[in-house]
Amino acid sequence: MGTVEERPQKKYQYLEEIPGIGPATAQKLRELGFHTVESLATATVMELLPAGIGEKQAAKIIEEARSAVALTFVRADEVLKMRSSIARLTTGVKALDELLGGGLETQTITEFYGEYGTGKSQICHQLCVTVQLPRERGGLEGAALYIDTENTFRPERIEAIAEFFDLDPVEVLHNIIYAEAYNSDHQMVLLEKADAKIKEYNARLIIVDSLTAHFRSEYLGREMLAERQQKLNRHLHKLMRLAQAYNAVAVVTNQVMARPDVYYGDAVTPVGGHILAHTSHTRVYIRKAPRGSVRIARLVSSPYLPEGEVRFMITERGIEDIKEEEGYGR
Image 1 (cartoon, rainbow, N blue to C red):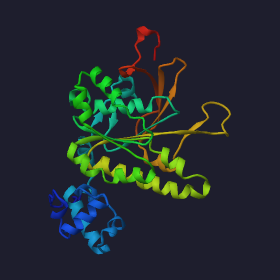
Image 2: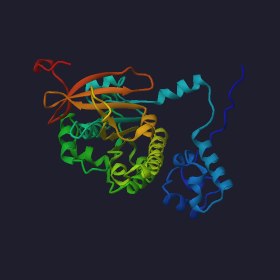
Image 3: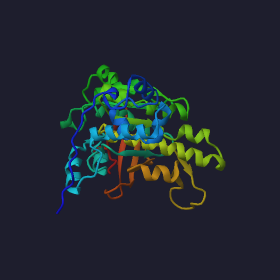
């Protein structure tokens, strides 16, 4: 049985250390959003051409960057060992963690979708806190990067949740890197330039809340659908690269739209079509239960987990498990 050739590992800390990148080229690459060696390793040749370099030079630069982060063929047993680095982030809700196989997985995209007011942003707020918990409590001991497209982020909510988890609210807020996106182009630029912030703050959680709001409002009609989907696809793949490069959890929230062809059952479907459906590794549908504060989370798709649903509740302390003594049940 043959063996897979092991390539010597080269370590580059800064762009300028990579052969073929001088100070001027490094500056242009940073302006394009490539701040780290990891971002170059997952880039395409066409993405580097605006930096004023040729295709051959771009290919060599990408190859050098990839040699530093070991993007190459490996055996399946080595993949299993590599997956040992994948961690899980608790939601702070036992039932929801169980539904997700122990929590949200790093190096993947988890999508929460549902109608307005179902608690998608509440989950995002809580994850910003739980990611800072020690590992023995289900956290990742890292910061959170939060891109807000609908002005739903509330630091006051973070303070209340942090206190419930016995964390210092001031320190928790300090470890959340926040930006509001004013349109779809701005949203894409924020993510493209996020590498440096992720590395500087050791961000282990990347949130885009909501992913589709700007795209949905700016690209109207069938004649603009193809362009919208292409941009959304590029945006999602950038998010995927960041999650993989930094072993981070990527979370997006999504809106829903009505399906007039459905006469029975829940007549809503998530926005984004096949692009989002194929890129999100885990999709969770959130809807309201008859009782006011109770929500139902349904695991719609996962690479290996079965479908299922659980209930949780939204309180002043965040999102919590439903207590049996309150008569809700599961």
